[in-house]
Length: 528
Image 1 (tube, rainbow, N blue to C red):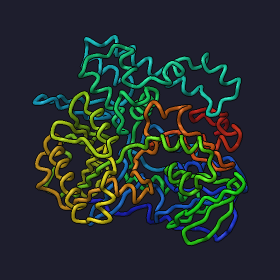
Image 2: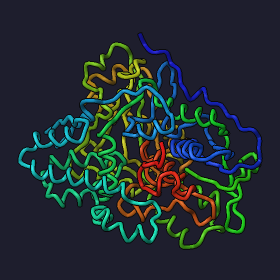
Image 3: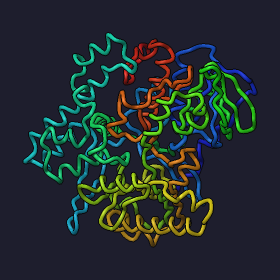
Image 4: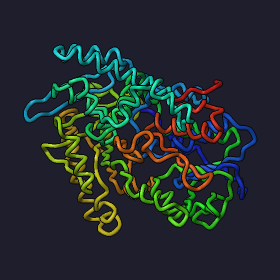
């Protein structure tokens, strides 16, 4: 029996009291904003807190929506964020992927190689050694090093004192050694030259649309280990996660104002004093946290007149992450998806080495470089878990916003034609490598473009992952949480569910002078 359609996000309503002053205002009810709010509530008492959200639901990119009789999702998996969820009292029913983490197909001309990457670091290591026995020693050395490297990240402080800085080379020498190393450089260090092995390993940088020769080796290592160590998805829909967070926040005394667009972050004499909404309502606050696109938040909402020239130049040099084409398909009940070996967090297909580099160069040029000989796509089948009507999602990155916004606003026929062209392109890929006969079973088709992501997120570039996770924007080179405007903050640890929840951890710990998380870079609360 098909599961009844019921979206949790629809249960969350505004509970704004109409007050004109708050201790803390958070702009954005995505996972970063909600995590920050809940961590703040957990570690303070009597603080009036308000979240402002421009959409009519919480969650940001972590959501689900209805199209016809189908439910589609915008998120693929839960990485290992269970400890943070338990700390906040977030209780939702999750399916754990115990066996394989990913089905990976690599196409080199007429040669097609398939790998089934298991969950768990030990299982992954054993699988790689069995698949590439000639590289077994190098694989052992690499992954042991990565595990050690990630463990040393835990020893770092978000804002180090002089003492912390002096001790860092002793406590975390591998972090220091790899601050400027790309993931490709990390593979080179361990002499991973087998192109087939590199194709498998470099999969973990392509998640964020960044090639291995630009991606931070530390960040890619963290993404790999936090995703595959324990990975999950809800038995329900992904919107249940932010809806549960929002309800907890409201139940604990917090306020949320939905359908509200911030027009101005008000700064006076170098200090934030509140916000102005598009309806001209002014709400004052001692502290404001923005989780939106930094170019929008700082240059548009604050304004260059309140920022030092050096900071403006730094903002201009930021490379925002890529955007995407996302094809959500509702299928008839004549197709047997359960028989097609699709029950993984990710089913990924791409052409071989060099693909990510070519695609990213196309993105940086303001367009895309996808072709029959150069492609990368992820296929997800949520209905195998939810029990709802058959659905497939095809996610394809990197795309630049290019002309998508112009077409959407001024040439709807061209916009529709381009959506259909790229939709058909990626449907054909999914049909060829994962779902035979897919096109014959499509009942509903919903295609999101970079313009779609821009419209919902407010990011001019339609960025999926905020700042790109390239090595030149990692760690101390990333925008700091503290802005030049006193008491205005922007948590920018990382993207994804893990990164977004860590944004909340680090942000609140900073506001509380290390009294919550001891200044640590990863989750390590003083009391649980």
